[in-house]
Structures are given as C-alpha cells and as structure tokens.
Image 1 (cartoon, rainbow, N blue to C red):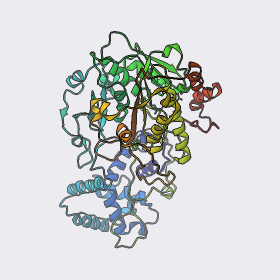
Image 2 (cartoon, protein in one colour; image 1 turned 135 degrees about the vertical axis):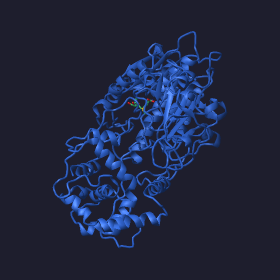
Image 3 (cartoon, helix red, strand yellow; image 1 turned 30 degrees about the vertical axis):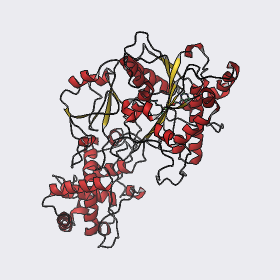
Length: 571
Ligand SMILES: C[S@@+](CC[C@H](N)C(=O)[O-])C[C@H]1O[C@@H](n2cnc3c(N)ncnc32)[C@H](O)[C@@H]1O
C-alpha cells in the first residue's frame, strides 16, 4: 500500500528538475522500492485516459469518498491490469475500496475496449497509445539523441566501425520514432544531412558508459547547437584552412568550443590555431575546462575561467590575430524542449454526469495528497548539473521586461565582438524562440555604430556552409503566436535577404530539434576603419565595477540594478 501513497507523493511533489526517473531515485522518505514506483507510474500513465473513463463511468469517486482521483487511477490500474492485482493485503481499506466495485469496473473496462473497436487488451493498449501520440502531436515528429563525432579524437568512419558497428542505418529521422507501445527502438542510426559528423539515434540510447563517450570521441550535442561553430568555420579542409585565432565569448559548458576545436582539427593545419574561450561564471568555467580536456582540445584551447567577455580588451595583444568569434550568450531558453518527462496524468473527475465521454486533462491537485494520513512525505532532490547542460536558464517569469534586458545584453556582447581588430567572422546564437532576442538583436547590431563603421554585414545564405545553405527554416519578421500571455509578440523591419541569412529551428516539426536561432556576421578584412584607436578603445573597454558584478553575479546570484544586466544564471 505504501507503493500507492509513495507514487502519489512523487507525482504531487513540487517540480525540481531532472528526469522523472532521477527524481524518483533521488527522492527521500519513500517506503516502496523506486523501481516499483517508477513501473507503476509509467504503466498507469499509458492507460490513464481509459482508466479515467472507466472510473468516472463506474462512479467510484462518488462511492468511495476516501479515494482521490490520482489514488483511484493507480489502484484501478493495478486492479484491472497488473498480474497480481493491487499490491496490498486483501483486508487493506485501499484494496477493498476498489474491489468492492470489481464487477462494475470490469464491465466499464470491457465497454471502453469495445467502444474503440479492439478485440483484446493488447490491441486496446496500442490504440490508446496511438491516440495519445496523435493528440499531443508527437506522432508527427521525433526527438532523437544527437551524437557528434569529435574529430580531435576520432572520425565518423571510425565511429561507424566501432561504437555504431551494430547500428542499422535508416534514411529518415521518423524511423527513429518510438513504436506504438511508446518504446524506443534500438540500434538505428541516421546520418545528419546538414551538419558533418553528426548522427541521430533513438532517444533512449544511452552512451554514458560507452568507451567512446568516456574518452571524448563522441559528444552528446543537439543538432541546433552545432549550427554556430559550423556556420563560423564552414566546410574548410586542409586546402583552405581557417586563418587566424578564434574566441568563444560565452562558452560554458563548452559544446560549441569543442565543436570549433573539432572543425579546426579536421583542417589539419600546420600552424596551430588558438581558441580562447571563457565564461563569466566561475562555476560553469570549471565544467568548461573539463569538457575541453575530455575532448582532447587542451593544446588548442585556452580557457579563461570566470572571464566576462565584455571586460575583455579587444586591443590586448593576445587577441590581435582573432579573426572569428562565436557568441552564444545567456538567453530566455524559450526554445528548449521540455526534457521533463514527468508524466501528466489524465485524471478521473468526481461528480460528473454519467454521460460524460472522457476525463479531462487537469493538473495534479494539492488535495491529491490528503488521503487518510498515510501519505508519504517525499522530498525530491534536484540532480546536479550535467556537463551537457549547455543552457543557463534564468529563473523567474518570462515577460517583456526580462526579454528586453536580455536582448540589451545580447546586443552589447555581439557589438563588443565586432570591435576586435582582426575579426572578420562572428556568429550570434540563442536557444530562444523570441524575435526580440533573435532577429531584433540582429537588426540592432547591423544598425550599431561599430557595425557601420567597420563594414559588418550578414553572412548571406549563398555564402553559408553547404549543409546550412540547405536548411530551410529561416528568419521571421514577426513572432509566432505561442500563447504566452506575458510576452507581447514582436516584429522586426529587416529586408528579405537579411531574414534569409538568419537560421531558425523550431520545436514540434519534423526536424527533431528545439527552438534555436543563429546568424553570422562578416566583414571584408580590408574594410576601412576610420576611427582612431583611442575612440575604438573607449567604445570597448568595460567599466570595472560592472565587470566584477557581471562575473560574480552568476556565482552569487546577486541582483543588479543595471537595466542591461541579466540578473542571474542558474548553475
Ligand atoms: C547559453 S550558455 C552557453 C552555452 C555554450 N555556448 C555551449 O554551447 O556549451 C551562456 C553562457 O554565457 C555565459 N555568459 C553570460 N554572459 C557572459 C559574459 N558577459 N561573459 C562571459 N560569459 C557570459 C553564462 O555564464 C553561460 O554559461
């Protein structure tokens, strides 16, 4: 019986981040085995719509007042579908509360199956899973696990021969979708047509204990996150290597830095290129250093730990050769796919008219916890940040004010990058879907004094690397409706070719990605720069007080009064 109270407690505990499984396994004060709780919830969530319907039609919640909707759903699941029935002694009140109605429940379950035209319980299971996937739109797309091969330590060919030796190649992303039972297919592999050295496998594939992952030969990095480094460094090879050094200004945990290093390694240059990377957060910088070392990029990459990019002096002689800069600053994270796999159960409702066809989806209620004093007191711990967690998502509500502050900071960061004396290529990216952080920032940058003075322009679609030229999702002129009441949809006045130059990724389409934005800026190295070094310097050097605040605020999570400053990183 503690199993059911524990399951209710897990489902009603405040959200704490991390995967559903990790939240159960890290929960305190559970009496039942975590594996048993996990199995009960996942199984019950596959059947929730039918169970809610059966419970409502059998009127159990009105007849058994001590049962909450959630408790009833879990118990009726085991009563009707678990081999051994309800896991409680025959005399326990929970079991009796359900078994008293066994004839009625069985009859309603049979009617639910017949109504759906299913001859067996197995058929019914497949039918409801299909129905669920169609209802939430997930039958139309698939979120795979993306794996990038690190050219410093390996090659795609090597990995296909070793790590993926027993994987079968498929020619569409959809082939990686879970089956009708919701189970992830195993050992299938799709070679990405846009990003070199990137493959997709079914989402459930776990590489964390594989030798290739542990040795940094492969890196788990979402496809969209691979756009910026590829847009910057392109398809260059030994015949046409990158000229100059590189900077990643907002680098932790280091996915894009190590991707840059991997692309540089592919060029097999005779003279070693330097990549400077930094992060204002000292804490995240430690992960950055670990990722760089794991990727074998130490000889090329210098990590400036806790360094605020805005405080970097472009005229410092260390950066005189810097020709390319990648900027992926803090953003709202509004494009991130809910990796939260926490089941949202459709619950039965009490006191509904008997003719009501189906239970409505509603949020788990606080009162689901008040059940006869046997409720477990569960605390679910947030797991520690993983190195692959590349997004520093701000806490707090997202509204126009926050987006404006973010976009001010984003524009400042990119404009600072445009002032490096030898810079000819800059990329700007976010994992936000909001135009104000994306195309609007691009418009501001193009209109900025530094861009005009130094002749910066957008990298046109026809100049982009081959894979990205083929990418069809481009910049937008106005925000898509997203139902967020606190954010006013924005518009931007950019010409068509500028929008074509911007690349977008969206959630919920056939590409299997989260929301993402990237644009590249270029200038002719010979462009005349009419201002004197003195003026340039005063434009770029950052006030020391702000530098300190910027660098420390994410470690301390301090608030800051400066309108342009982003007030908090979640490490
Ligand atoms: C979206 S994350 C970067 C993810 C990273 N590019 C990757 O692919 O792994 C943004 C990072 O920028 C850092 N950041 C924000 N403002 C910064 C600044 N002014 N200087 C340096 N780092 C900054 C944050 O601490 C955060 O780690």
